[in-house]
Image 1 (cartoon, rainbow, N blue to C red):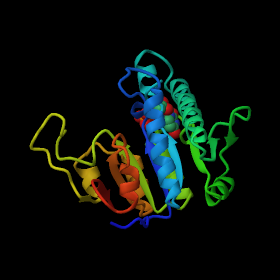
Image 2 (cartoon, rainbow, N blue to C red):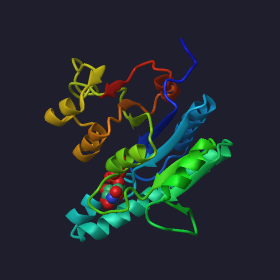
Image 3 (cartoon, protein in one colour):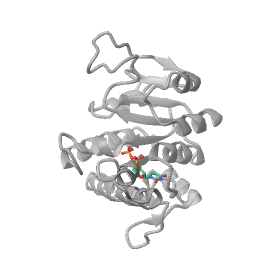
Length: 238
Ligand code: UDP
């Protein structure tokens, strides 16, 4: 077992729902702390880490639109939800002694920095965790796409997608015992088979930029570090 990380710089995408724990809505502090502890351990390995956090635990634009709101307006609300999650993660990380900066795609200077690519890069070089908030800053996009975009801009070696299970399966492993985990898939496999990993624009952007996607279980303590060592379980999409 090698302690040497296989990656120098990665982006971790965590969905808003992953922060809910067993709750139906909002944030579960213990869950946020658990993910923060895993990030801390990976930083301690010498890996540079940035994060994109979704907002689905608070508000999703499509839900607002379904309830009769203007879609773009609802999407801006969704982006604001991601800022709340980013601030919660920053607080958890800093309590653990991990220097962190939040950069938002929608300027909010009283609470965080604006997104400035070169500044974000500098923070990462100094070992700070950068949490990218407010998605891409544009309605009609998702934080999956924001993650692929920021990972590409930051020249990350891989994008990690933390999910509820330890990779991509042929069926839902929580419902179907015969479901098999894929070790490796291509971007086109994911698109053609409509596998529920990340949305199609995130997969396409990753494919164009040859950004490997590693899908793993965000709730298994130590799994993030294990993926960084190249150990499973995870699914690699290349
Ligand atoms: N959103 C957006 N543009 C972006 C990223 C996010 O409009 O670039 C909005 C969209 O309404 C989305 C919400 O923010 O529903 C929360 O993001 P997402 O659904 O991606 O969060 P997750 O599913 O990862 O929790």
